[in-house]
Amino acid sequence: MKISSEDQKSQMCTNAYCCCKCASQYPIFAHPWNSGPFKGSISTRLGWGCLIEGRITFFDFEHTECEMFTPKYDENDFQSALKAIDAEIGYIFDKEELFLEKFGKGNIMNLTTVSFASTSVKIVYVLDCGQHVSDSVPMDDYLAWRGKQ
Image (tube, rainbow, N blue to C red):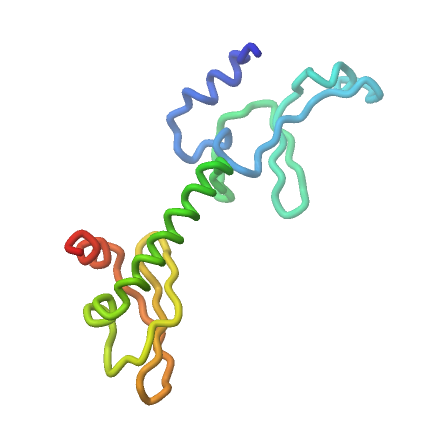
C-alpha cells in the first residue's frame, strides 16, 4: 500500500497538539451518490472532520490545533500500558507492608485500592479503627521508593 504525501506529512508533523494527532479528527471521503463537490469515488478524500459533542466540523486542511485536543492512542500500546500498570499494582500489593510503612499514616490494617495518575499514585487503606483513608503519593516519591526495592 502506497502512503499518500498527505499521510507522510502527518507522520512528520512535529506539533504535539496538531489535529492530525487528535482522536476527534476523521478523514471525510466522497461518495458516488452525493452531488456537487462531494460526489466522487469513496477513495477520494475531501478533507477532515472534527467530531466533538456530536457535531462534525469540516476542514479542508489537516494541520491546525484547538482547545479540544484529545490524543490518539494505539490499541496495542494501550493494552501494553494496562499490563504494565497491573504488574505495578501487583508489585505494590506484594510489598504491601513496606509500601504502607513508607506512604501510609496511622495504624494500618490493610491496603484496599491502588491507582495511577500521571503525577501520583492514589491509595486507599483501612486503619485499625475501621476508618478508610484516601491519599495520594507523588509519582517521583513512589518511583524513588520503587527504585530502592
